[in-house]
Image (cartoon, rainbow, N blue to C red; front, side, top):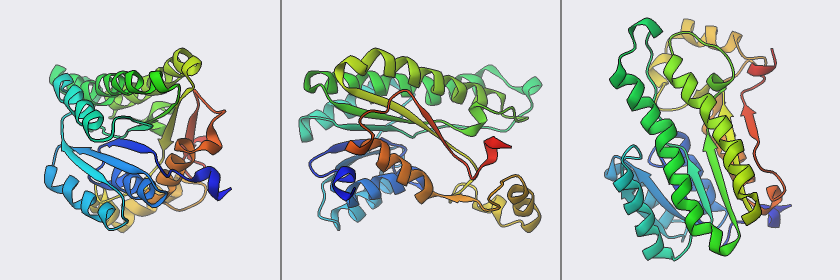
Length: 253
């Protein structure tokens, strides 16, 4: 089984790879033998993660980019080509969210969330496919959310964008299967990260969250990155177009 999870010789690009789940995916890919391109808006944070990867004797390229900007997307894939000459794995992890009642959502808020969560994901996937198709091999992993399949209040644009990610995953998987490119998505549940640590510091809020999860625990970044390793490796070569819910049982209630 270990050899089926081996990523030695692979090149992976992870958007939103400078912190949280994305950074954990980067480090776990490197631990499995992959070289990585770390994309984020904060170049300093990207460089910090790249340094950790270098200590594993893997090559890491930090890139500052905004996935809502098509020119930035094209530039980061050009750099990947220059540095490695190929791309084996893309993880579309960069995301945007906001909490707001639907009645109060403004056009700018809607556009920002969809530009990052859907437009950016699509054009990153397009650029990746252009690199993968000539080699007849590739893995594209999209990070969705349980919010894309369940109705929660005050996150309407985010939920709509993540539902679209799940369907776009199926569409791209169907279209690119002939090129041996597998496209899948991961839908995390309630995950403890540095982004939500302030909310989790409130015992009452934490207790409410735990009561919503059948396993009665929050997920951690490793829970998501482990699935990302599985979907990037040979062991999942016959799986495409699927969304994996990693949520402690939240969506089976």
